[in-house]
Length: 246
Image (cartoon, rainbow, N blue to C red; front, side):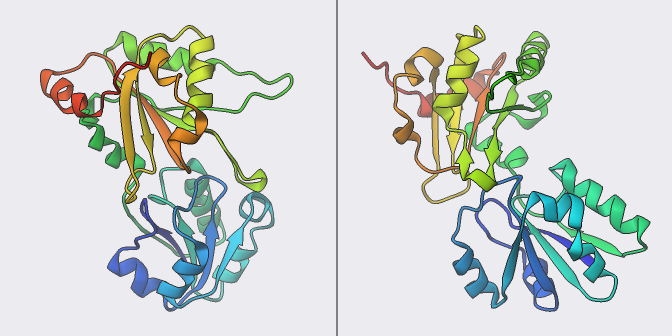
């Protein structure tokens, strides 16, 4: 049997997740997200050895699926297991192989982003800003952002991760890309959501760009682009506003 178990935002499994892990061979998927706690600490808490899978392990080799035919296997996923489409595809493939699956849910950035004070039902389609590469500088995400703003919807902006290279996009890099594309409005920067060192900063993009990369600390990060605000959203957001930097 294959279990997809959410780690939440800070490596805190639910009671059901902890109980289930005890009977399983345990794997961890990290190429779609960032683990905010040391792997050794997670292994110590769960009292289990954890094998980290690469993208190739997940999408091509899939040894963990072969093992799930005859034994209980747990695939740990940061956040909630079904937020990334990759994990839905794993379930589809498992069912093709007649492998029973179970999802154990947990908290996700998609719900916890409400800590900004923005109302969840007012969010539109989420976007991801990818790293630019030679011959690869996509802008389709910006078109989605503009469409969200036209209908008065907020936008959750996920930042690119290249885990195999230990490369995680910083809010400053993301805002520089948005600024080059012509964005000049207000932005909410969210760092390490759900962790003890969580930080939320709100302000005009040109003001936030005056902060250096080190200001934002360790990943994970995301941005939120607010659209039309309810007066209660405005009131909540003001506590995060950055003073104007000269």
